[in-house]
Length: 104
Image 1: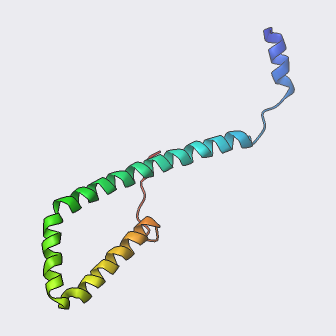
Image 2: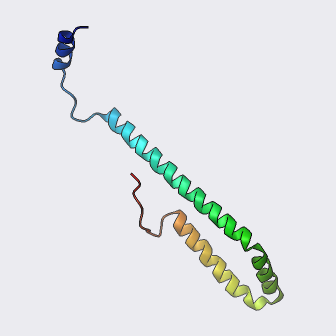
């Protein structure tokens, strides 16, 4: 095609004010990027927590053995376990509003 034909072809149509397919594609790319970034962050946090638990395994085992010997600590243990479970659930479901970094 010659330049005149192309100019005539493009002169007939104006660009749409809003292109839904383009917007959907951009939103999909942004959502995918955010998902991958959050997945990477959660994977890093999980690895760090695994290393910390592995490193403190003997201390936790000794503390558990000591707590089992005296049931006086059972209430405190349940309160601590409940608090950790509550905070973990709140962080995972984003019930606690932490400042978010915008990576892009």
